Structure formats: C-alpha cells, structure tokens
Length: 172
Ligand code: ZN
View (cartoon, rainbow, N blue to C red):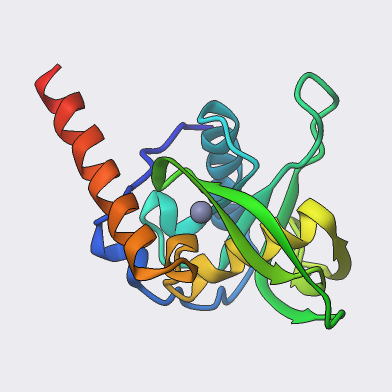
C-alpha cells in the first residue's frame, strides 16, 4: 500500500466528473487500499478517487471513533438517493480544501447502493454523520465540492484562504 498525494483546490481535476468502474479487480482493490491508507494518514474520514487524481467512481470512508477498531467502507459506482425530506446541517471539511470548515445543509438521511471491495452489490441506509459524509463524497464524483454549497462570499474566502496557506507553505 502506498500513500498517494492528495490534490487540492484549485486543481482543475477536482471539477471533473468521474467515470464508472467496469470491473472490481485486483488493480481496483490496490487503488482502494492506497486510498484508505492515504485517508488514514491525512487523517480524514472519507476520500474519493479523484482526490488522488484518479477519475473513477470510487469512495472510501471510515467513521469509526479515533483509536477504535477501523471500520473501512469501500464504495464502487455508488448511487445515492435521499430517504428523508428532512435536512441537517453539519460542519464539513475536505482534504482537498485544507483548513476550511463550514456548515453545509444536506438531506438528513439517504440510501447508497454500490459495489463493495469484492464487487458484490450492497445497500446502506445512512443517517447522521454517515449521511453527510456519503453525500459529500458522492459530490466529488460529480466534480462538486462542499464549498460549492456555500454563499459566493464564503466560497471566495475559502479559496483565498487555501491559496494563502499554499503560498506560506511554499515560502517556508
Ligand atoms: Zn471532500
């Protein structure tokens, strides 16, 4: 397993729509293993393949409490549908938008249908943080970022903040 580089805004690849996976094979499992290791190292709770520059419809997540037993989830070709009319606000962050945290309104509950690590069809009912995380990661597959759900002012501030952090890191 290899830790891969996580791309950050304004990398244009983050705006790309990812393509469906044709088969869940060892190559894809190797990608998912790398993604999981990259996510744990960051650390983060969710990662889409495009965030390591691979435009495939693949997501990994792990919402287990820090220090607990890992509970990795792998989603290939996921399809999501809201299962509640209720909405919820959660403060979100993104490994591709470092140090920016803002409240985003999303469906409170959703159902995600996908192929798992072995290529078997699964369905998962999501509530709470899992529902938020699933919708955030699904957005990545469509080239949408959580800051796209914010007001223009907040989005502009977020983009500027990341640019400033990058400049500071380059000059350090
Ligand atoms: Zn993200």
